Image (cartoon, rainbow, N blue to C red):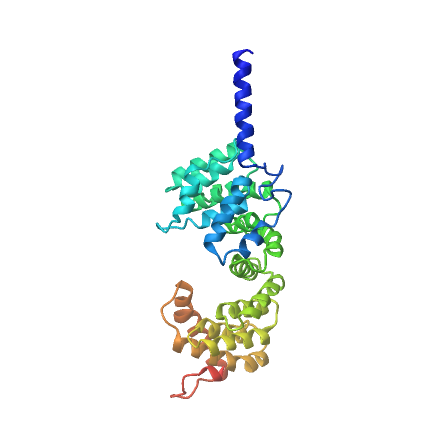
Length: 356
């Protein structure tokens, strides 16, 4: 036998011996979330979280068999912790684990274990060099760029993640938020519209994403009807959330539902009498346009005056808009109201919430 043939036979025997010790299965062609033809590993791992030690051992055994199963790696890496709160057993496992040859997963693990973003970035780029469709790396890459305020690169990473896995709500939500952050509001809204319906109901990100999307629709895009769907879902879970009620009132205002908006702003003041923006908004709703018919002014301006006086009595130093309202806009409007209705008698009590 020629020496080279002998070497090949030895290598083949070694490979067979290794496979006999632990049968390792390659991932599916387009995903790193199946093994043995099965998916849904996240649910199986979640069911075992009540026994951290047992879960750790199960994850390690699963990874030995399925070295590219990303749900298992993500669960196990979460046990590593932060700020020095490491799990020694997990660190020991990854210290000797090499993964499948040619797989991007070992570099992903290396990135997660890195102590600084420079090493993390290098490892993630190495992972993507092995598999440009490995969307998990794009998600982490976006977080690295976000920490250095490289927002164009953040958007690019999330766009690539979305193309690599169109059904990923994490990628789509990250894209929506990053587009919003750089001012591409219409594009952000389109991305939110894709992401929101597919975010799982139990995902922690759903609440904040719903608030951000709804606020953008109300205040930036002036699409209150689209926002109301999300605001009502949020309020069903948190009916006394002042911020949500303010947003819902603003949506009613922009939809032309003045009385409904006023009722919601009153509800805000009942919950938090110091939320004077609600009183200011009630005043603005009743004041309306200065050019309205006198009969309309006489009907609405008494309520506007009460709200404005409440605002001035309770307003404190705030942002530039609050200062302008407190020192210029509201006093000017009160003078116009007094000219039409007559000045209030001296010593008129300061309005209370119940007076609005």
